[in-house]
Image 1 (cartoon, rainbow, N blue to C red):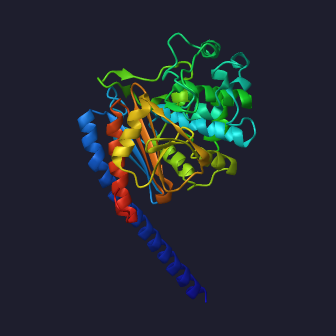
Image 2: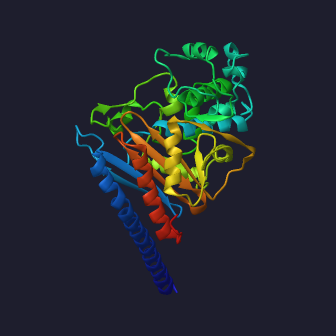
Image 3: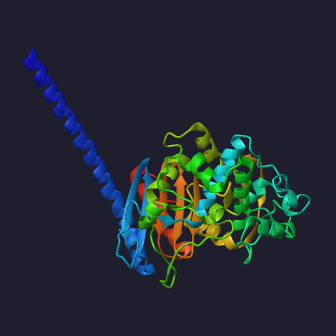
Length: 394
C-alpha cells in the first residue's frame, strides 16, 4: 500500500509539472505572438520619430503584458526596464477624476455643487457658479489651456478666477483646460480635508495596488525616473507649477498603468468603493461630434474608425459645441475609452475596450505628435483584437 501510494503521488506530481509546463508554454507562445504585433508598429515608429525609449503595456483577452524598448536615458544608456518611471501628462487627469468620484461616493461632494460652495471668494462670480461636473468635462466656459504666467499659488489663482469672464455659457462648449480639472482637484482636497498628493496615495493608489505610481517621486526611485527629451532632442523633465499635481503630475510605470486599466475594466479585485469610483468616471455627460465626454475620459462607440479617434484628439485645443446627455449615459462595455497625455519631454496614450478585455498603454520619453501615438496604438489594438478574439477590424 505504501509503495502504491508513493507511486500515485509521483504520478500526480508528474501530471502537475506537465500541466504547468503546458500552461506556461502556452503563455510564452501568446507573449511571443503579442510581441510580434507590437514590434511591427513600435520599432518603425521609434526610428521615424527618433524616440530614445518606449514602454508598451497591454491587456489582451484579459491578460497583462509589458514590452520595453530602447533607453531611459541617452546620456547613461540605461535601458527601459520594468521599473522605469515615465511622466504621463494629462492621463493624470483621470486620477483626479477618480478621486472626485470617490469623494462623491462618500458624500464629501456632489458633481452638481457649484465651485463657490468650496471657495468663498468666488461666490457670486461667474466662475463660482460653475459646477463640479462642468470642471470635470471641460465645459466650464472658455478657460485657458494653461494657468497664466505669474500665478504661482492657490490664492493667486483664486484672485484670477474671481475676475475671470467665461465668455461662454457653461455646459454648452467643450474647451480643454488644465485649470478646470486642476480646480476640481483642489476642491477634492479641500472637501476631504487633506492635501491632494496624500489623498491620492491613501484613497486611490495604495488601494489599487499601484506601487510605482507617484505624484512626488521618492528619492530612492529617482534612479528609475526616465530622462525626457523635447522634439528637438533636448533633455527635460517636468517642473512644478500651479495645479501641476492635479492636472499633469503623475509619474508611473507601464505595468502600473496596465493594472489601472485592468481596474477600470473590472478585471481585478479592488475595494468596492474604489471600483465604483473608477466605473462612475465612464459615465457619458456630453456629446461632441463622434466623441462622448465622460468625467475626463473620452469614449467612442466600438468598433471605432481611426479617423474618428484622430478627429476627436485633434479637437483638444479647439472650442467644440457640447450637447448635454439627459439623462447621462450609464457606463458601457461596448466602447473605446481613451486619454492622451504629454509633457514637454514625454508622450503617453491609454485606451481600453471593456467588452473585449482589451487595452493599451503607450509611454515614450520624447515629445512627438499626438496623431502618431494614437495611430500606433490603434494599429496594435485592432490587430490584437482580430487575432485573439476573432473580431473584425473596424
